[in-house]
Image (cartoon, rainbow over all chains, first blue to last red; front, side, top):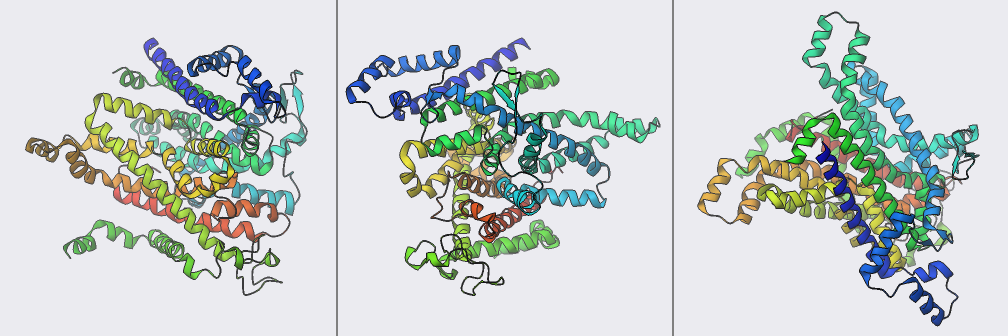
Length: 328
Length: 305
């Protein structure tokens, strides 16, 4: 087990090094750190001086080493030209909005897909089940941004019951100025509803189908038959015996899908003008802020590598075969 | 002739004829394809031709509404282009990018998957490790980051000029591991069968065994994922274009049309967004339905849910 964890972490580190090397090569080739720091109104001589002082004339790998060292020890990922602030600060300021969006969506998915999935598995022939299943094919074919636009039209323009853009009123969490949350005010939650619902339409079909098929498979097993034979109540068989055992694959997929959802937040954030990381990223693209773009990529890559490593290790604890095949 | 006869008696055709959903999806898809191919001839106007566009015609509603005109059956967009024509052309662009991207994905995935499955050992370990790593990043994220970098580094101008081939390559590169994994799995199942051993005994070269003997027997799974992947690629293209990282608004694809219409939607010109949107949803829906059906017929073992 220890060897497995060690190998998995080592692999994560190697992946991060490769990604950072690729990303740094782009930054080194096309970026302009002098402009990021002092803007464009400097004479060529001053530029050359600053460049020398920043070590921009050093060999490639010296600079790369410095990039990695700064990033790891100081969390320094360069400066944003657009915000005139260190990139790390900009990203941290925008992260809470995105995290709350993902959190709200995950909540909606759990609350809706669990009961519906179980229902569809237990009574596959009933009207609601069939309706859910055909609706889920439609849901997969519906692009998130279209759902979002239609939701805004219905709820914000036509009926005018929910706000259409922004985060609404936020409060400072822990009083440190880092985390402004919209989860604690009614206005903030009202602003969260539409973005979260439109984002969840993407994943709901997948989870309902997954829970349904896993549950149906479990219902066919011997131990369920035995549980019926013992005369247990239906609720106990369904929920304690069957449902518990469908959860493992569902949780694994959930971990992966949260990452995918993160990519789709870009679309929702654009439609709802949601001031999160995706919106910041698109702004950086529009204004050609390469430095911020690179920093964003590093952070996103680190996030994915971290989540995947943790999921794999956890899975190694739960399911021994992963460990064995991994070690050869 | 014999092939045709074989096809007529096959289980494939039999189950197709019995499935109403499959037949109707196939018909709709065929209509879509014909429309896309013949777009330059059947469109009432050419949306690329600046001379035929009149800004005075902008935001005309569909013809059954008040102020609508029969010249523009589905109305016009904010630049005065006929919606119907832009939708035909948009569909064409989306299909070109989608199919091209899947061809690239398929080519990379099949070659690498065959190599990994057949050669095994080190080759397998290296290729599949790379595939695993890329698989752990969502493909949409990969595509978004790649086009963002390209746009920032080479400027918006060259991006817009090269948009079609570039998007095809980007979407193609972002999603090949899916193919590699599937092919590898079926190659590993095939490679110890007698016919492969026979080919090896005759002394055929490795490449010829891989491509002419094993590959044809692993193609069913490729077919199943290809259909679904075309739908995914069209969706990715739409998403990228909607983010402003794909097709420019001046050259319509379904995603960029929705993007263009979004700001006019809330001020009442709903048709600029809704028609391309429905168009896209319908197109992706029939591909998905066909893909589901193909999966059930060709690979009952894969079937889940």
